[in-house]
Length: 596
Image 1 (cartoon, helix red, strand yellow):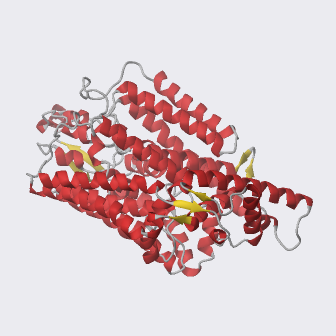
Image 2: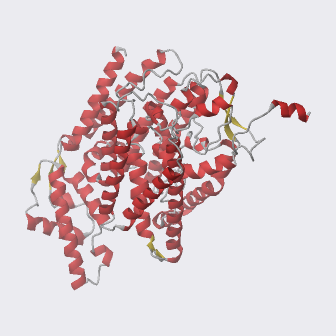
């Protein structure tokens, strides 16, 4: 590592420290003016009255934690007071839902009040802190990455299993962290569902059944290729990176009121693009895009000897920057619906929600086009394009989740579990999530067309709330990205993404795509298996000269890029499309001779 790279790491760490410290730099004073953003007069007056009663009005708070605690208490008391008042003496000129204050409204009030009442260096100098966080982070990252272009091209492991960042987890701590995560998600899910035990209990039962099925069919100890069993547990840098990411996603999804200072520093960018204040989702979109671009440049330096990788990386950078981030913001500025044209159901699980369908229909011709476009992608786009190119066209060239995994997650791709046991879990879980998404969507559409939320004993509002919590937040975000430094970069894509499950079914049974192998050239070095982010033991196929036709393969092509002998090749062929998913097919020379 040269001096420029050391300076780059220093600047990046400095930006990360400042970014974290930003959360506690403002002070807050709850005033009547600070509540002017609340346009509902009934709510605003009731909140002011409650704040005066508790002595919180015009009180100065030195940090957001104390402010949020008191303000939430005020909102809870106000909510209870309004509900009681409506029951005893309902007003004639105000509807019930305008008079009462729902939970989602309270969260919105909390976030906007924090931004309106904040005072301090962050609120007064957002552009300065934007530079000190995002700016320094980008400069530091580029200073570390750009010198890599001067190194010799090619893939080298560079002691990845001995690095404090990329070492990975041994079996025992991996199981421990997974169990702690599952238990924590279920406990918080109980609170998230307002004390309803049904869906957390169903999830626990399904998880237990999947585990039972995996172990019942395990006739012997089944493991994948050995991976340095003597190497110790993940180093402290990997643990820090993983738990920092997990903490970030917990705040982003479930406690956004605590990160209002982060949204404040990106307000200038949001104002420039859409004309609105930044939300936590704009913050996330901006961070996501910056990371994909900077780490995409790193991918270019690492795989610059391979044209396929360069083009593929450029593709995910383009789709994330232009289609997923900039275009929806521009549409919002033009008073059109916020829409990501590359996000497909069931990954975009809210597509068929009533509020989204109504919003698109009410938006005129462009909204109708968005609705038809989304349906056409599901019904026609996915099966047709996947038939010709496999799931790689989306998972490795277009998808934002895949783009982040391939760029920011590339240093951790070797941590994916290659064992047969992990493969069995993968099949049960990802197809289970796909079934869950289909059932949830069917119930949502039933509610949209009939007006009834109940089907038998199930309520569509509850099922979509739990799906959003468990799959859309906990699995896709907290685990899917937070576990990059702990268990690999494609945990979500491999085990949880319902769209990947849908694409994979088409790819395995009716697609021209496959990875062909030349077993006679294989030297069993294991580079291909090591670098497979989807947990496929590629060497197992290469040694036998067997084509790789796996529903999980995203066609990233890295296995071919790291092969020193050119054994692996990505192809689109149709000659044996009806039989390629069968058991190992051996070609016997004697049979061919006799046939002649």
